[in-house]
Amino acid sequence: CKKLDLLLLMDGARLVAAMTSPKNDMTWNDLYRLTDVFWIGGTKNGALLGEAVVIKDPAFGANFPYHVKQRGMLLAKSRLLGIQFSTLFQGDLFSRLARHSNEAAAEMSTSLVDMGFTLWQPTDSNQVFVILPVALVQDLEKNFDFFVWENLGDGWQVVRFVTSWATELSEVRGLCVVVGAWLETGYAEGSSEAQQILLSSVCRQQDL
Image (cartoon, rainbow, N blue to C red):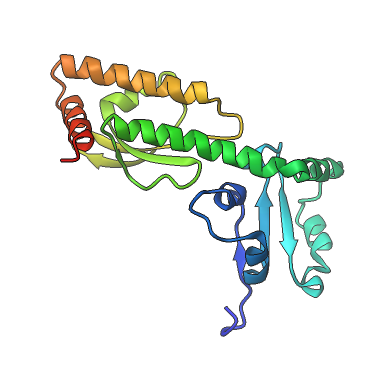
């Protein structure tokens, strides 16, 4: 960016989840040093709505308040947004909420892998990408909210589960109980998908 005289902006909608990930080695000081503009997302980490925009160069950010007003982004009661962030930044609350969402995703990911399922991507924050049989996906849709990320064909789909600051670990365990029950029923009924998943689980446990 510097070579081409460009500014570097980082979308921080999920920033706090990334910063509190066990895989992260970047500090907030690093983030400030390496970017020109970034924002700290509140909507996905406990706030009602809003982002806290950080502009490093005071001269560049001098007219930003006017830009906000001219583009229709200025709320009449916008001080309420500031109160949210003021509260979230106290006592490490923002980070604690994000760590909880990451830990919930990690528990879900570990449980699904232990049951024999394959992850589409490693679980590094609060999003779990896992490959599930379409029949199981259709069953889960009755009681759980998630997103079908990609159709792989042959009866398999990539599903994205997202945990949040409000996700109870009991909800994660409840989902895993439903998945486990589906596997047992499917295996008993001769489902090839269930048999394949359970075989994968046995092989993984025996390190084959």
